[in-house]
Image (cartoon, rainbow, N blue to C red; front, side, top):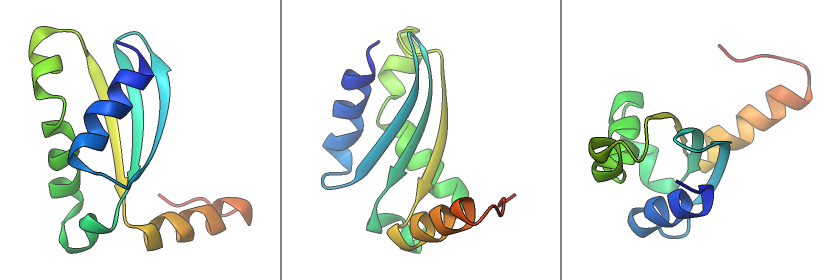
Amino acid sequence: MLAEELVGLIQKDFPGSDIYIEGEDCSFSVTVVAEVFSSMSRLQKQQTVLATVKDQIASGELHAMTVNALTPEEWTNKQAATSSGLVSL
């Protein structure tokens, strides 16, 4: 699976979101930044993003995907912490 294909699948369910992908072949790390996550728990955010690729996971086309789903505010805070040298755990 190509990263561009993965972005397309995620964007169908999260139009207007910012999507950042690392990895290749069948293993990716994905960060999705969308306002829709504001009312969701961390687990709900991850499940919602993973649902967009359930067919690709079931077929084996996508073997592993780490999900980091954030609201725009969480993304901004994370970027500020990273640039200041702080690490969020």
